[in-house]
Length: 100
Image 1 (cartoon, rainbow, N blue to C red):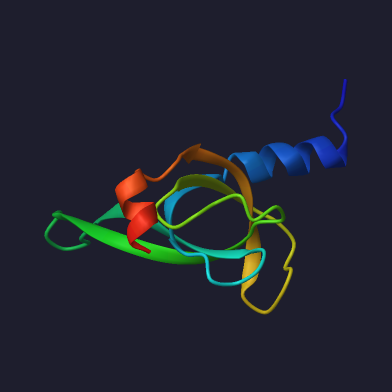
Image 2 (cartoon, one colour):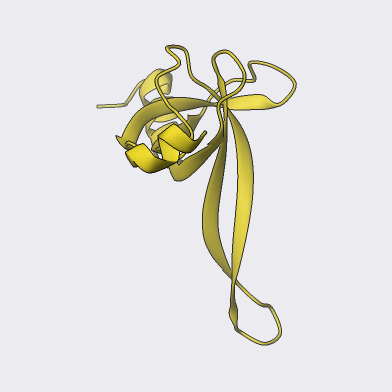
């Protein structure tokens, strides 16, 4: 029983899913998502907090600033967008959404 190439590709993409917070929703069908992670310093062994910002394709414009979202890699959709929105994990608190 061998798995098809498409199934392997899907499984590989799902293993690289990331969870982050939407920091910008000003563009149509595009979001900027910031993902926080920790990285160990090579010499001192101390864990440092780092952030990475990804440009994400949101076809239905369903996410708003402050939402926690799950993103997955996909084929390049533009010069900077190579990630797609999988789902909104947690909606932003109303106070944050109203202030923007």
